[in-house]
Every structure is written in C-alpha cells, then in structure tokens.
Amino acid sequence: MKTKNAASVMSAPAHDHTHDHPHGHSHVHGRGDAPVKALSSSAYPHVRMRRLRGMDALRDMVREHHVRVEDLVYPLFVEEDVSERLPIASMPGVFRETEKSLEIAVKNAAAAGLKSIMLFGVSHHKDHTGSDSCDPNGLLARMIDRAKQAAPDMVVIADACFCEYTDHGHCGPLNDKGDVDNDRTVENIAMQSVIAAEAGADIIAPSGMMDGQVAAIRHALDVTGFNHIPIMAYAAKFASVFYGPFRDAAGCALGKSTHKVRTDRKTYQMDPANAREALREAALDEAEGADMLMIKPGMPYLDVLANLRRETRLPLAVYQVSGEYAMMKFAAAAGALNYEQAMMESLLAFKRAGADLILTYGAQDAAGWIKNNT
Ligand code: PBG
Image (cartoon, rainbow, N blue to C red; front, side, top):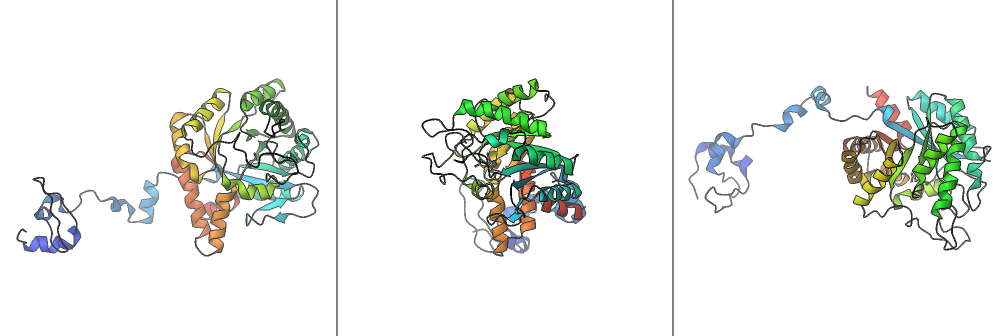
C-alpha cells in the first residue's frame, strides 16, 4: 500500500474503484484509497460530455434527431352501418369512426398539421375472399373518397389487405389446406389497389405479406392510369402479438369463425426471430418497385429498422402498432408512465433508428404537443 499525500486524499472519493497496475498486477483500492495516478493530468476528464448538456438552449442546439408533425401518419378506423363513433376498449383514445365522423377526424388531423392518414375499414360485409374491398361502392372505396373530400390536401394511404373484409379474418382467400392462397391473393390485391386508387388514394400500402404483391400492384396501377401512385410496402411485417388490440378494433381476430382455419399468420408474416430475412424481404420489395419501405411493429424491431436504413436509399417508415400504443396508454392509466413523455421518446427512438415516417395512433396527440412546444 502506497503512502497517501494530501492531493490524493482530497481526490480519493472520486476515484473509488479498481485500477489495473501499470506493471501488470492489479490491486484493489478500498474506499478513500486513491491510486497515485490520481495526481496526474488525467485525474479529471478533459472531455466532459456534460458540458453540452448544461442549458436547455445548448441541448436544443446539439440535438441530432427531431420528430416533426410531417413525419407522422395517423391510422384511422372506419366502421360502416353504425350511427355513432365507438371507443375501442383495447386502445384507449382510439375510436371506430362512422363514415360521417371520419370527416371530422380527418379535418381535425389536418388542422393539427398532420399530412397523412391511413384508413382501416371495419366491414359488415365480409365473405371468403373479402370482395367488398374490391367493390367501387364498398367500404374501402367510400372511406377513401370521404377522407379526400374532407381534406383534399391530406395524403390518404390505403392499407391494401383483405383481413378486414374476409369472414375468416385471414389476409386473402384460403386454399384447401386452410392456408392463404398466395397467387389468388396477389391477383385480388392488384384489383383492390386499383379500386383504392380510383377512389382517390394517394399511396397504396400492401400489408398482406404475399410474395410478388408489390410487382403485381405496380403493374396493375401502371396499366390503369395510376403510374403516378406510389407504393409503401410493408416490407417486413412480423407475426407479432402486438397486433392484438388492432384485431379487436378492426374485427379481424383469427379463430372466431366456424371454418377450420389456422389461428395464426405465421405462414405469411415473418418470424420475429429473423433479422437477415427482413433485409431480403425489403430488397425484394424494392426490386419489385416499392417507393417506400415499412417495418412493423416498431419498438421491438428497432434493430431491423436500423439495419435496413444502412441497406436502402428509399424512404423508410415504421409502424408503431396497436399493442405498443396500448402498453403506453394502460401504463399511463395505471400511473406507471407519463403518456406524453413515453410517446414522444418512442417516436424519437424511431427517428434515431432511421425512420423517415412513423405510423402511430398517437399522431394526433403528438401533433398537438409538437405544436405547443415550438
Ligand atoms: C392487416 C393489418 C394488421 C395491422 C395493420 N394492418 C393486422 C394484422 O396483420 O394482423 C396491425 C396494426 C396494428 O396492430 O396497429 N393486414
């Protein structure tokens, strides 16, 4: 044990940890027993990260990422044949709008500065193939038209899928094994996309995870006069438990029908264990003509988002799904989290990981907070 001098005693409390001895054998310093090295120039850090954290204004100046209202896409549910908007129990603060109240919701979104919405139908006309979504007078077409009428400058994204319109809840017609028939679904989704574009959709976002769907939609749009309509591909959509509240909201939970069908979507949505495969999925969608790529869900898949950011130059979107929203809302209701802070921190995490756009049920709330803070 070395003799202590005044300086090392004074600095001792700050150096109360284990040091490697320069000659290879290390020794442990007990409380108050500083190494002689504490006297040298490196006793105090020259680089102090806290220097740039000392003032609000300084922190504002060196902030690397920001969440803008323009980054947010607001998903809305629209139920047909109902007289009033209904709250969704599993998603506090989210409603199933009526076709009429959709207009108010869209106008409110526009007034908050939001640029884009995504629409989900809650159908009362379900069948095996989800044919109502391909009817020019069906719910899908009507709600797109309503939204565009209410706010012509709003970018309306059509979620192209069948699960909200099939009686069995799967994302396309089933084959005799009870599994979704890929190629029939692709034919149908191409048709549905044209219907959505005709109704006024500004972006088509296929979410069914069928192989070849992006190429088929691109072709169908191109030959029907919609070559200007972009495709936002749900490039990597994982078979996630976090979609639970959405399925309640949209009435597309599996296993409720009398058909003998699979009760999960694992034959088309991705295995949550697979990160490399997500990059393959994204590369395929890009090659098939996708204009933007999306990762879904969000928070549990930030690694996938960050990896994809390094692989592609396309704009990237991330979908903060119903379960993520519900977790924050219920935690806040229980007094465990502050909803505003949790939501804003999660949105910032998406920007940091590389997202350009964020689909979130918190969009309307966040737009208000962002406005008030600037
Ligand atoms: C339908 C679709 C789903 C979601 C968006 N589009 C459900 C699913 O794939 O089971 C989930 C959205 C959410 O949970 O917020 N293809």
